[in-house]
Length: 310
Image 1: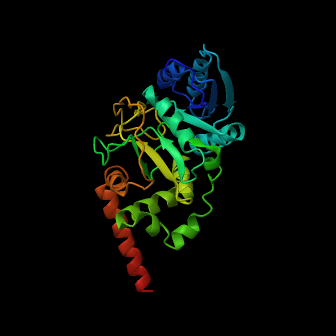
Image 2 (image 1 turned 180 degrees about the vertical axis):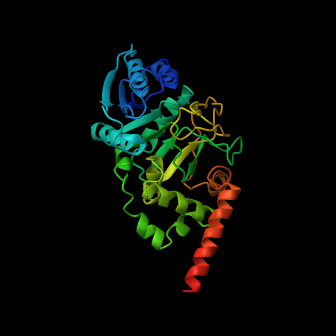
Image 3 (image 1 turned 120 degrees about the vertical axis):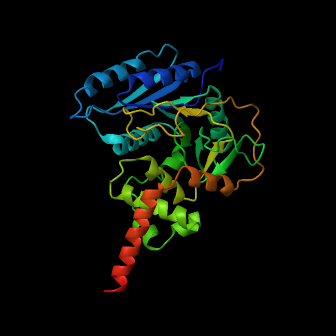
């Protein structure tokens, strides 16, 4: 990119100076006019965090282009759920739209233009809530368009608007109603998918999973929101290792190569969710392991037997 990026960029960092430095360099090449940085504080039971957090934050001082840098740093550790949620609340209290990267999400240079053009293209289309740089179809594609519409809010490099983020509910207040009245059946249709997401959302609701991203996905589903996904992968997660919060073990999503998207973009002629691609994503990524599935099925059988014999 040979001109400054007009869309603000949000950079979420913590205690990983190695990956932060690499992603920061990609942001530096894009030269955003506004950079908003969200940082969590050191964990009290991890003595090395103080030094690592300081080293990570010092990378931001390397901004050497004309840029308005806004910082939202926490002195204490808030954890993934609260820190990212409160940080993005701060972001969208200040600006209308943004491109968002975490410290282990390395974008192709064309990711920034892809997000910029589509943020403008769909600015007033409330059906669209997220623009993502992720593609987990592993070469499969249904059309020759530059992107498609999905129910999944992949967030390893993404963009959104204030109008969408206003629906984010950290407490998931609607979950008990959705759960108890079987509303997931109207979203997912397939039993295996319903079972998976009932388990995930209940675990998140009970704070057994410290995640903001699942809460964001749930919030988007409650609005029937769609996500734009590119037909090639534009962002690679380079953070799969033991230092990560959630991506500790390497799997097929680690370090997926990025490609360069071609402009001008080829836009779909209709706004319809690609259920075929979403079904592949559900089966290949969002699934129980065989053992976990058997344990869950056995538990349900025992519960049904107990209830029928009261």
